[in-house]
Amino acid sequence: MDRIVFHHDTVLSDVHLLLPNTCHLMARLNRVGQPVFISKFKILRDSQLPDATESVPISAEETLNEGVGEEVEARAKEREAIAVNEPSLDEDGDLEVMRRPGESLWERATRNKVCPIILSQSSALSDDEEEGVLEDKDNQGFGDVIKIEHTMATPLDDVGKQVWRGAFLLADYIFSQPSIFGGATVLELGAGTGLTSVVMATTATKVYCTDVGEDLLSMCHRNVTANRHLLEPLGGEIRIRQLDWLQHNLCTDTNVEFSWTKDEVADLHDNTSFIIAADICYDEDLTNGFFRTVYRLCSSFSRPCILYLSLEKRMNFTLRRMDVSCEAYDHFRHCLRQLEAMEDGRSSFMVERVPLTFPQWLQYERIEQLELWKVTSMPLQYHQGSSDSELPFSA
Image (cartoon, rainbow, N blue to C red; front, side, top):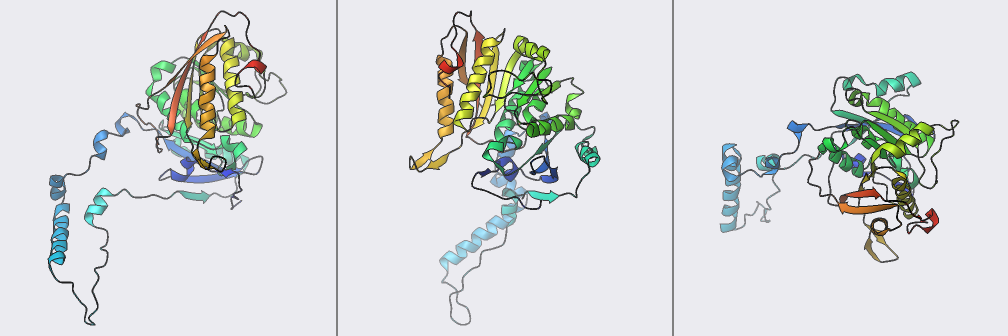
């Protein structure tokens, strides 16, 4: 339990590597024996959002007023004196080399401190104590913290149990556009830990939070429970359901956990206005399945629907090309173009990239490889549609 074993296919989200000032508390082992951690993510309110003036460097005049200028000036005079004088020798006649000075007041004023991530493990918890962790008293009464259970360093086929930067980017957009999603019914595909669904439920009326795997969906359910302090005051509802992109129909078997009711299926098709997805395009087969699912759902909806999809463009060196490439991203863009070009009389799709000019509401590194895409689906009069096997992004 103390050791995380890394294999050739082990991946670790940069969110867990780079998040500053965070204590990741190991809470338990999940059903498949993976360590489960709990992380808290602070929501930055209006008064805390990054301001452009915060990154302006200190001017020379301000530096002098702060007492830093005197030290800088003294250092400059010292360097000038060394430049015009002969090199100094020690008592043995050896060249006296000036040692690197310690950290100056100027460096302390201009350099950001690097804060390591602290990993700590709690003692073994009983079932009742686990629920107590999720009901942490530190969060009661505070609406500015999202608490998420997740795993770290998982195999590639289990990455949904980690938190990724794409989820934060999409959450930023939701926080920045509350009027767009207010009162809506929303479907999230590939929800993973459920972080983005939790954020969406602070604005939308109903969110269908979907993924596959009982262990992952159980973790998602725990995260929704842990963030009731965000949802209850606003009345948002999250329903966690199973939705497999590689299956044609929704599971309505009452004996299966997280299955759909017939009323929910009807509600999904009649009232869904938005589909959201974050960081789900990393495998070609899954990307094909995702776009087939989007096409199938949007073609059956009775109203226009907008898909917001965030992702991180990940560069890799491949032996096949002997160069840096991003094959998963290239395939994603290929599928987007195919979706936009489809003409089958059922739906039309318009694709556009969303500029990342909205504020950052969560603390993470918003890198230039992050992207947000908007796909607008308009239902058309049905004539004779294509079967799934005829879709351009079929496996």
